[in-house]
Each structure stands twice: as structure tokens, then as C-alpha cells.
Length: 600
Image 1: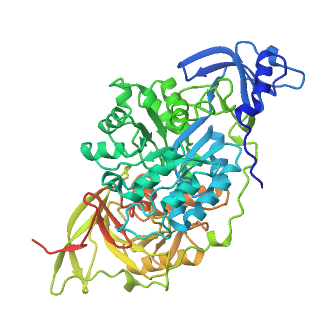
Image 2: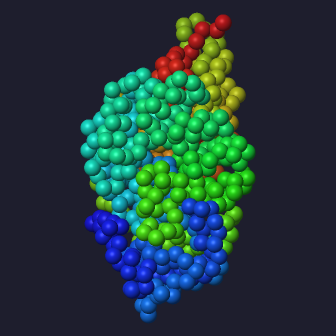
């Protein structure tokens, strides 16, 4: 399907003016709704909206002068008319879906604009993969704006990616029609220390007049934080407490507060507005990472807004944070984010501002969903074979590949252990004394093994370590080719034979997630595109993802959305301890450390 640009405002302004003035009839008129004006934070009853050319021409108490015999009339019947919701920072790949299927999943929930950073596929397929995501995004009936990924690898020298993004790649992408800015600048030490490559990427973005996304995952809010802000990132979503949110807005950034499938960072930060009284226009809501099960069963940005309201936020302020604030931040206030003349006609009808049941979704003037069901097509990109054949281990793995040998003569050893923290992206750097059984170091209690298996260049490399917090019991293993951000293969297990079975299974199916117990596969989510996504319908992927969750629970895991924790254990830019293909990484110092240490 060929991409057709949405008509620009200047090209349709004569028609909008004529409709607003009553000289020409509107295409559609919504009558008798409560107009949620996010510019003034007012709820104005008995209002009508006239739409022409996919844009809003008129808003007021009486649009009869805009109405002709062919005008479609939608009776709001006293329901609230709110702007289509915007997700300010997200990764489509985290939904395990392609852009088309992601759009199909979230449109009925009222999301009409997304600002996506496809840095997951960038790590696997480079600029070519980003272009594929960008091109499919442009085919959709809603607004999917793409941020050019900035950091592949996210931490140079501490991981090896399938491809590396260069400043030249960034400069090229800034000329593409759907690129809105630079994706999250995860290499914050590089910015702080003036790394020429990172600064060149930022410069290419700013020279194009576009927004630089931030990612400052350090608790240090002193000079290093100021240096990072001075480098150009304009927003940040890595805050986890009120002090983080306040520091960001005080320094002129937008504080993006996220509620994803596993990240619950809204409640701890929104008090900056609800209790401290800071200007809410500098706060934005986003999801960051939502898997398909959350999208199908709980919602998307409507879920985030509901949560913010439940945390004490005024509904009109919460809606502003999910609409106008986002649009303004990305320089799109005249395009999206409010129900006002000239803007794209992205409108939701709902009977309740707090619970946000979505009765109807209009995007670009077209009814795209009604009563929870999508009413339009979401076209697919023709994904080539090079995007579907990305798991290369070099050789079949065996239990021996996951063995951890102790120093000669030792009876017990002290190990550095990754500690999982429920509902948060950071981990804990733990130490544990572990036994040696049969000449190998073994996990004990809640501590099991984790391995990072190289899958891009068929090196056969396996990095072994230990992780705590999942609660797994019995001989089992879970493997995934979703391993942020370098996306090798992460295998976590209590038994080396099961770990080998799980890893080899993902090679066989071309990527995804699998769980083995006692030699039997309990669950499989096939992700054939880059080992990250499926182009199957969201409901089918969510069904398989739910079986995965149930299998994790059957193996003893009780964590909320533990899969998200699993997939981030290789993200070497978020403290404290991570695993990469190059070893165990202490993210507090950005240094590789030994897995085993001498006992004191």
C-alpha cells in the first residue's frame, strides 16, 4: 500500500474557513457533547464540532450553519468529547506487535497519536529496520510519529549489537516524512562527558528543528544531571520519585511519567503536581513499554489516564497531560492534542471522565472504532526475509554451555547477583555465597542462573551469571530473543538442560519467548520479525503471552509482569547490575565486573 500524506493545514485552510463561516457544509458534525477544552481545562456542555477534510473546522454551541444534506451527524447525547490520547514515549516492539497490529490493538482504547522509538529493531537490523517500522507506521489510520533511535549500542564498549547507529544515520532519518525527533538518549554518560558521536546525533536533530528525547537513569541530580540537560535532551521518562520529576521540570525538561505493563512510576511522581502544586503543563503521561496482554485486556493511554486520576490527579489535568502537553512538547500543538479549529479531528466520545470507557474514536475525521471494536483497516508492510531470519547462534547449545566453574580448590564462592525489583526497571547489585556441587557453582534458594546468548553474528558466545527475585522452582528455563536493548537471547533457569532446550527452540522458530519445565515446552510466543514482533493479530499474540505468564507462575514466579523484568536484564544503561554479551556490568560505574569474587 502506498503512503499518502495527510493533507497539511495550508492546503485545506480554504475549505475549513468556508465550513466554519457556513459557506460550505461539513463532512461530519458531532452534536450535543460536553467539550473538554484542554487549553483552558473547561468542560463546556451542549457543544458541537464540525469536521471537514479530516480536520476540525468549528467548535461551538450550534453548528447548524455548517450542516448540509450530506453531512454525517453523530449525536454525542451529552457524552464528553475529549481529544484523542497521545502516548509521548513508547516502543511498539514491546507490544510484541508490528505497528499495524499495535495500532489495531490501541485504537479502540482511544489512542490516536503515538511517539515511538524503534530502537529495539535498530539494534537488530539497523537503519534498515527503522525504515521498515517508519514505513508501516505511516500507513496507519492514526498518527504514528517515529523518533530516530540514538543509541545502538546503548552503552558502547559494554555490549555488542547487531548494528550500530551513526550520526550519519540520524542525519539521513531526519529527512524522512514521519521522523519527529531523536529517540531517548540512553548513553547519558556519553552526553555528560561530551562524546562527539552522541553530540553529533543531537546536533543533527536540533539542526533539523526536531526534539531530542532523554533517558537519564541515574539518581544523581547534581552536576552530571545539569550537564546532561545542557547537552540537549528535552524530556525524560526514567524518573521514579517526586524529586526526579521536580528536578526535571525545574531544569526546563518535560517530566514524562510512565505506566507500562511493569513500570509504575506515575503514583510516585504525580505528587509534584497534586501536592506540590507545580505547573502541570510540564508533565506528560506515557507508557514506555506495554506488552500485548496489557493492551488487549487493560487498555493503553486510557489506562494511564485512569491511573493518574486514581492517584489524585484532576481529570482535566490528567487529560491535558495525555494530549495537549504532548503535542506542545513535540511542536505539534497546531496539529493534534486538542479539539480546536484546524487541528486533526482526533476525538473520543466517553460517558465518564474518570473511568474512561471509550464509546467512539474518531481519527483524522474518520470513525475508527466504536464500542470497543475497530472499524477500519490497519495496513501491513511487506516484511522481507531479512527481517524474519535473525536468530544465529552458531551451533546448537548444550548444558555445558551454561556451566559456571569456580576457582581451583574452592568449596564455596561469593557471586555478584542481579536482583530483580518488582514493578521497576532498576535492579539491585547483590552478593551471595553460593555452593560448589560436582565442580560447578550452583544457584541456591531464590537464586537461579541467567545467560546472555549472542544471536546476531553466530559467535557461539554465552555469558553466564546469577539472578535473584523470580522465585522459580523445579527444573525449568525461560528464553527470550527480546533482550533490551541489544536483543541477544536471555535465558533464565534453574536447570542447564532446560536452558539449552529453550535456547535451541527459539533458534528453530526464528525468535520469540519459550518456557520449558521437565523437558516439556509449557508456552511459546512466536516473534518471527527481528525476534521481537509478530504480525499476527494482537488478540492471538496476547493469548499466547497470557499462556507464557501462566507458565511462569506455574514455575513459581509471583512477580507482577515478570516478563518485562526478564526482558530488561541486559539493559546496560539502567542501574544497578546487568548482563551483556561482554560480561556482567555494574551500571553505577559503567564497568564490567567479575561474576565470582574471593570469600572474605
